[in-house]
Image (cartoon, rainbow over all chains, first blue to last red; front, side, top):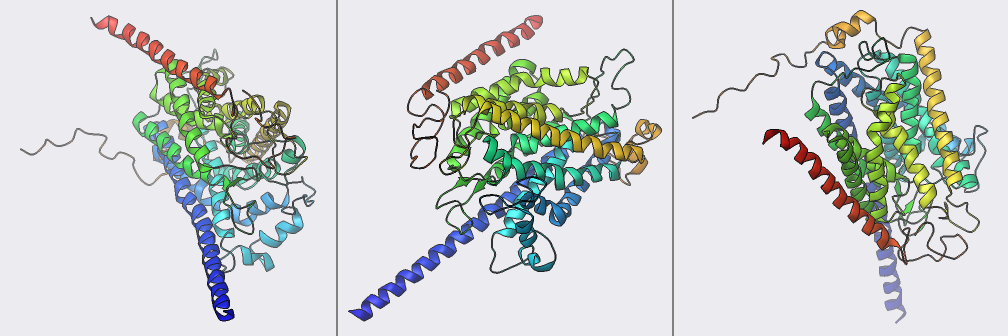
Length: 461
Length: 57
């Protein structure tokens, strides 16, 4: 009998071990999959930007976008990851109440040298750091791509890459540390809730872009002497619209990566949670992302009938509901997104009347709508606990407003300051003659359409 | 219709089941508003489309 009991106990222990290993492998795979899904966002931004450029700048816009992706990755490895873990309590680097933050904690896990390097490279005892870092790196790269579209056709390549490094490595990461971390002061003190990063990714990137646009100035020919604006259409609208659809595909990975898998030592509990530790299901994402895409498209269609703005409306729909995708009722997400689709074009027109040449509407789609989404959640989601446990701050309009103001300030100040320095160094804007000639012919050793776009050969009989 | 649908001291402790805004009553209102928006969008869209076709009759 005792032998049978011992054998049974051994079998149970073996089963528990296999179950735990399966969960660990699932968790690792969960984040691993989000990385290529998010790279689809960049395929989309690449197509979107190149299509939105005039033919003479198509490839240079592509070069700029590809380089931003390439440089943000090592920047986030070198220092961005440290910012996220080190600064949730502010620039003091103090540790937060959950013991997951502060300079000392970050020093132990987020530098690529010393003892912390064990967590920054292949490690058979650590199946989460690499994939979690990878997902966050793609968030960082997304911020750079958001900014990238706004500044096409007149920004210098290296100057732009430096801006991408500042934004992807520092600006958005600081916002994430403060408002997207269980120890973040905006979460603990103000109940800021931004599940899908409407504010801390989209709005930060968009207002960073706005700060850059102020120093960069409009493209030649965009505005007339009387201040009225001219349309400078891109050379390939179908390419742009398809790119937008790819961005939307990739955002499924982005929002999936905002979920914390359960059942691991680093998890919030046995089941899925938001990054704040509050409960969520993937079903919530399926319901609300789809309904918000639909609402955004329909809202933009009603107002514009333009495929560019309709697909931008899809993106705006997701962004408008992103803060509360975990708790919205699907029909409510649709209503909020519909509103975003309707206001999209008028908001972009207001920006244009202010003399800002945002070539792809990035400031409006990501910035204005990101802030709209944060505030809408403050109104309809007021009272939801922003974190786990008793005494947690609750979601409120005031709290969301504070979060929005902080995110705007982080983006705008860092974008304006860094681009001002580049302008003073002569590294921001291309020379006027180069802009008129077209940047492809000036600096890209390849031709976008060497045969033009000729009619194809006749069909075989 | 708005806000946290549980009266348990503003905590997630012990919360189970539907957690969306309007859970337990009121969610249907959102659904009917969304349906109305879709119908209105189709009506407005058709009016706009018809006006475009009117030049081609």
